[in-house]
Length: 376
Image 1 (cartoon, rainbow, N blue to C red):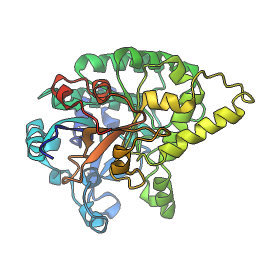
Image 2 (cartoon, one colour; image 1 turned 30 degrees about the vertical axis):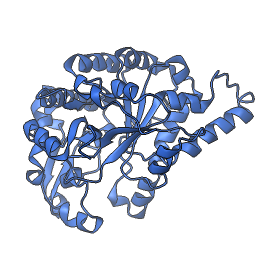
Image 3 (cartoon, rainbow, N blue to C red; image 1 turned 45 degrees about the horizontal axis):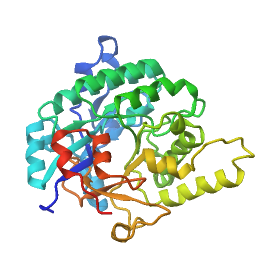
Image 4 (tube, rainbow, N blue to C red; image 1 turned 180 degrees about the vertical axis):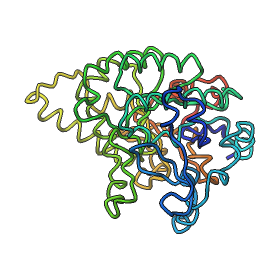
């Protein structure tokens, strides 16, 4: 492992609970996200905000905790979180210990906020996070690469926030994993935002647990909770399908989309299926795309995963198939510092392109430029 320069492409903050109220606009502070200890008589500390389902704070730093230990682990509060979640200097020490050169860092508590019913409140929460995250990462922007949060009800406002974030040092942003049904990502209303993301070279991430209808992970739903979790990647399939078939990638060829923490073994069949429908019935449906659907995905979609035995990395590294050519990256995603170290995750991309292009697009950091190798 020490022979490689590793970049974690999907790490996470765990935001201090008081951060939201401290940084949000005054008119929203009484409604700011916060935590409650012993909610409903349950042990633990819970993240709450209006209509979102309460979430155990310890779950945000529970990566690597064995399944059987999670119920007990989730009784812990924020004070049990690793020091690196509130002190970036400790995070750099964690990187040095793990042999990690840099981390691309996503929100934790911000993920359920994508399901807030009040769009203005959500936008205020996201601005507060964007300010906090860039301040945290300013400790060393070469090793701590922040990704921001964007809500898209007000598209021109979202484009302006993306520009503001870029000026502050953000290198990308999260948007809904799946847009509302009444305005899917193929809707022309979004075009000013796609143009801004393309021009700013800001990749947009579709992260698990960030749908417009909520996380899809409400344990109060019993067995339906497990069914929902098992099928969350369908949100990403639908979003990418809409962007391909709806002509978004054709119109904005430099737009980059990242599927984050949604696994990847399904993508080979997914691309085949899109190509098959396009080839067989595209004329019937009035489709006039000049490229195959899979070619847009290979050009513009990237993905991260934790552990996906269906995606056989050694086999692919030794024999990159023409049907689904994957460039295996020497950057890694660790889902840290939610708890202790996990097995490292290889970042993959939906097309066999030069690794230097992927790293430039996703992090654009001089300190990372040296790790531009690929296995294939």
